[in-house]
Length: 374
Image (cartoon, rainbow, N blue to C red; front, side, top):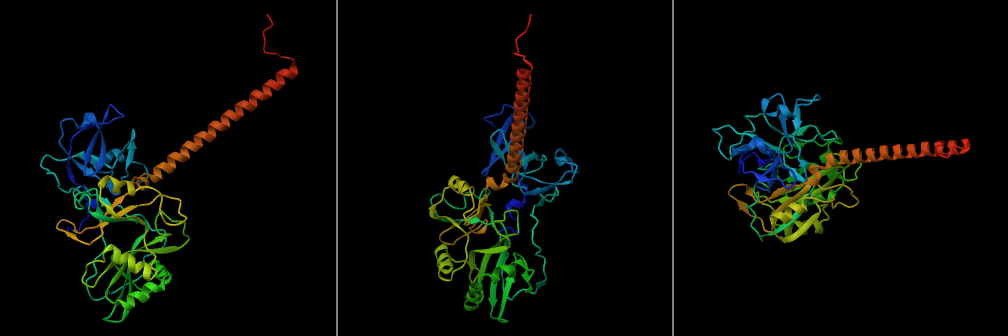
C-alpha cells in the first residue's frame, strides 16, 4: 500500500468533454466518481489534465494557480463549487506533453494537503511509543478506488466524525496505559484532548487492561474542528479495534464489544448492506446521526462486514466525504446573503409603504384627490 493517500495527490487524468446540461460554454469531465466543470473552449483538443482536488492548498504565486489570487493570502484552499447545478470537485489544469495518465504532480506543483486548524490546544508533550508496531490510521477515498469493494458485497457504513484520531492501548511490556493521536503517543496532561476524552469513559481503559496489546481506535470530537456536534468540550466515538497481529475486528465482533462494554461508538448508517457505489455516495450526505446535532455529517466510512485486504490499498476500508460538508460553508454564506437581500427588500418595501401612507394621509388632509384640475 502506498504511504501517500490518493486524496493528497494531483493525478494526471484523461479528459473527455461531456456537455453541461445547463450551460453552453461549459463542459463536464468525469473521472472516478468526480465531476469537473471546465470552460469548453479552453479544453477542445486536449486529452489529459492535472486534477487539483478539494481540500488541497495551492500557491497562487505560481503561474498555474494565478487565477485564484486574492489579496489576503498566497495560499488558497481548493473547495468544490456548484456551477449551474453541477458540482465541480476541484478543477483541472493542462498537463505537460510528457505527462502520463496516473502520474502524481502534487510535489512538482507544490501542492499541500489541507489540515483544518483545531480549536482546542492539542500540542501537548509526546512520549516514547510503546514497543510493537502500531501504524497510523489512514483511509483513502472511495471515489479513487470505487472498484475495490465489489457490487453486492456486504458492507458496514458508519458516519465519518470530524475530529482528531485517537488510539488507546495497554502494554504488557511496561504495564502502562498509552494514549495516542494519529501519529504520536501523548504524555498524561489535563490539557490534552485525547486524555480529556478517555477520562469520560474509564470502561475503555479497563477493557484495554484486560486485552493488552489490542488498540482501541476512535475519534475525539466536539470543540476540535469546524463541526462541533453541539459539544462545549470534547467527546469520543470508537470506530475500530486492532488485534495484536495487526488485523482488525470484523464488524459484528467490533459492535459486540462496543455494546457489551458500553463503548461510545460512531453512528451506524447502514448494516450488512449490499454495496452499490451510487448509494454509498448518497449516504455521505445528510444530517449527523449524533443525537441532538443539527448540522451535516462530514461523510461516511465503508468497509466489508468481513475484514479483507487488497493488493492496491491494503486493508479494505474507504471513505466518502459528503458534498453537503464540502459545500457547507459556501451554502451558509449564500443563505446569509439571501436573507440579507430579503431583509433589505423587506426594509425597502416597508419604507415605501410607510412613505406612501404618509403621503396619502397628507394629501387627504390637504384636500388633494390625485385628479388633475384642467
